[in-house]
Image: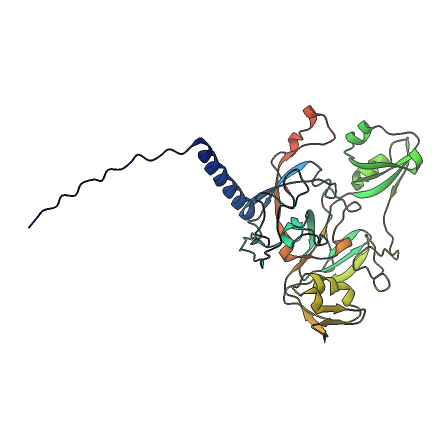
Length: 368
C-alpha cells in the first residue's frame, strides 16, 4: 500500500489589471448601476417650461420616483445607456427600433391618485417609441373612471368641485399708462409675461391673488382676466368635434375617463371621445381599425360596444392658460406614465446672474 502526500500546487501571482482596464471596469460598473437605479427607483428631471408655475418653476430640478407606480420594463432595449432620444450634445438618435418589446409594469406601492404631480411620455409624440416619447409633467386632475367637467375655469370630478392648486395661475391683460420695469414684475413674482397692446400693456400669467393686488397701482389702468366664456367654441380642444361638443379650454365635459374593463356604447356621440384611445393606445395595428363619424370597424367588423384594456388619466398644468395638456391632446394611457414627482433637489433661476441663480428656499422642497 502506497501513501500519497498532497502538496499545494505552485500558483502564479495574480496579474494586476492595467490602468485602462481598471478604469474601464469601474466605468462599466458605474454605467450599469446608474442605468438600473434610473430605471427602477429614481430619475432626475428638469422643468424647462412654465406650464406648472407657480407650483413648479422653470429651472427646478426634480427627483421622480419610479417606485410609487412601479417601473416599466423597457420597450426599446437597443439604446445607449443614460440617454433618452439622442446622444448627448448631438441630434444623433440614441436608440434603434429594430427590436420593440411588450412593456409590463412592476408592482409599485401606490397608484396614480387625483392631484398627483406626474411625469409621463407625451402621447402626441408619435415620432418615437412609447418609452422614449418626450417627457411631460402635469397634475393628474382625473383618474380612470372619473367623470370630469370644467365650468368657468373650475374643475368638477364626479360632480364635486375640485379645489384649485394652491398657486394656480391664469392669463391676464394689463393696460398701463407707462412701461413697467422687470424689477416690479420680479417683486410680485410674475415671471410668465410678454409685452402687448402695442407697448401700452402686458399679457401675464399669475395667481388670482396677485392679479387683485395689481388693481391697486395707479399706473395700471385695467386688469383683464382672459377666459373662454360658456358657449364659445375652440376646435383645438378635445375631442376636436365642435359641431357635437362645443368645448373650450375653460369649459368642457362632462365625459368619463376610460378605465380598464369599462365598456362603452359606440355611437356618433361617443366616437369623438374614445376613437383616439381605440386607434392609438389599445394595441391594435393601425390597419386593423377604421373609423368614421358613425361607426368603428375592427378587423372589418363593426363594433357596437368597446371594453378598454388599460386605465387612462386626465392631466393639466397648474398654469392653466399657458399649458399644453389633456385639453389639447386627450387622455394619457397608463402605459405612458413614468413616475411621481416627489422632491425638488435643486432650483436655479435661468434669468438671474451666476451668483444669484440658486433659489435656496426651494432646495429639498417636497412637491404637493
